Image (cartoon, rainbow over all chains, first blue to last red):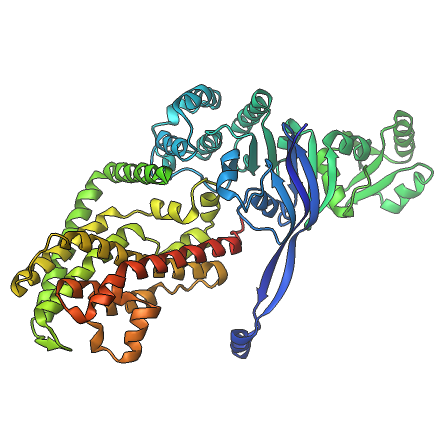
Length: 338
Length: 262
């Protein structure tokens, strides 16, 4: 299959100026300014195939938005090569953007003062979409996203959820083969989120649209993406199937104990020293958490030992959540999955 | 090219629609514009009422130059309404949106920021020219209107070019202060005959910040001041050169755009 996105040793550096303190410092700044070169994106490489849905995740400031902005041609890379839809985004910007759709969750693509349908009409002209193409494609989009009643309202009068659905429709007017979504569900309620997810799945199936999605909401990723690329301080720390990540790292259970009487951690640790268990202790809530492999035998043994020694108030058995896995990854700073 | 012309009309009709939505605003604005133009007119006549001769120019000639200046200035104001470029597009990151659309970024911004009511100023300008022209007994030749249009476009391009270049500074410097107020002050010099200034200022107004090409030089042609004819005919040339330069600078600047954080 064809690659929609090819990224090779991509790098972006920003000059970060720092000012000296005091008046004398300000005068010195006039002539020579201190700056540090900060690498927002550090020599990353990856490919995305046509039709893939990829989750691009990372903490704030990990370099997600910077990468997306380079892939969409907004920013010029400091080094490395990008090929998106067979083009260099920044070099052939005007021709290139014809083949992509972009939604920035925190920034409106629509004109604030005019009715939604007027925005659509203008964008239709901007992207040189013919009437037949528009009718054929957009009628369906409008119906699926349920924005028909919103079309004659100005954008400034829409709620966030309504606006986001319109933004999404606007990004699809020219039916691009590649869609970039930067935080598309930020601040939305559950129902709108579900609707948007369903819609994206449908678009992907129907048109084989490639979707690159950044989000803080991991449930978005779980619902949509088979593959995740995880970024930390400008480096890719994981690139692969979401399932792998869960199987390998999430292949564990978490047992939470609360005791009736005061128990201290070393005592618990001593008691279970023979078993492969890692203990954590939440001082405030007095919750003892045991992380272990998903092994029924082991779990029974652990419970048996604990119950025999201490009086139990509460026990919970949890599967490790994706969120937990990802938190762990960031704490450790690396992933050992292939 | 055809595409750009179509897009221009598309955006313009959108602009008019938006304006019509706020009907009361439109009417109020129209009258306040009309008022300010009328005040402008009275002001010009009062101020120049006391001057007689200035560097070889008569009172009516100076008024005529001022009137001419108002026309390219109105055209410029209608199309280059980018005073807040730094604030709106760089600091607030609106340029992100512009850059994801398949039209040249500068053209898009010009289209988005159209301010067509500023063209009303041209009416004042024409009225002033007509007043001064009648008093000077100026003859109107068949080619005058054509040259007038060419000179007006040239003047507006000079203004636009310098303005865009100043806006480009925002791509490199991340300071919030803009050079725009300074630009406004200097631009006023072009309204008066340049030979009343000393040579340095004259040189600057002709070749560096060529505001003289917006007012006095092209107007001199219609006043039949033969010694200035070369400069008059240079107007469209300077306009095109400066505007082309500004577009070049803009294209370089866009590569330096750093984007705004979310």
